[in-house]
Length: 267
Image 1 (cartoon, one colour):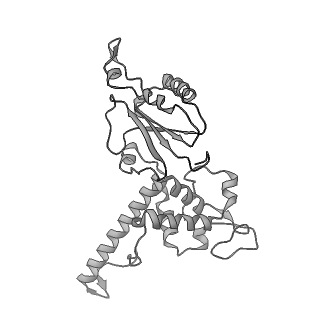
Image 2: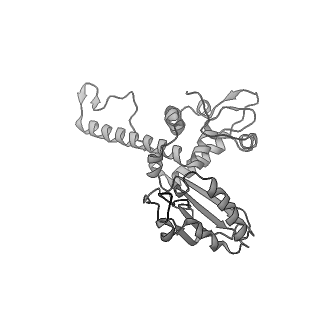
Image 3: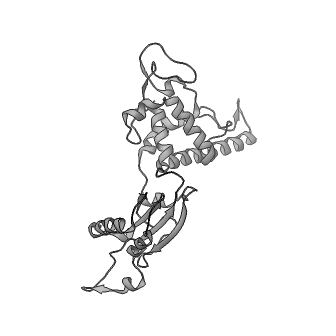
């Protein structure tokens, strides 16, 4: 079993709130719903088996089946690494599920120890295939993705927030999948546009390369005059300006306003 190194930081309250078993079940449900490709079929060939051999007789049918099963296993492992590198929720749940814990504090699969001792889910459930796979792949999962890898893992925004308006800096040449390096998300609840405008202007003056940043304002209700923030993305005329022989690119790459007023100011 590999040494546990957390995939992300955890607060003490987060560690104590739910057991690793509960975190594992939450992770499994999420993978089944969003990423079923990471779950290997039950017919995957074990490493000890020699493909295509039945006694001393080679069976080409078995060899073909074994090759297909191994290919499915490698693809599922690659997909699991990719998901646990990129999906923040899955990454956090996996980290919490694989962590060492006091067996006397938490119940695992309906059982609870009466004696304090440190254990892991994998020690308690050594035949669990998903736990086995995560343990074997842990060092690969620990590696954070590069920007190029992140581009290929583009996810659409969660439903519920409605786009109100968007202004894009024409100076910025967008990538279709991952146009900006940084997303700056501002939840706004009973905020004035002028107040946010001043805040974003101050941040803009300190930014090194703001055209690589998209600003997303989420109107949770009660806000006014947010449309003025769209001007911080510049326009064609601003892009044509030249100062001291250099183009004036000091604008946010994109400013978008979304309406999400069903949470009462909460996400």
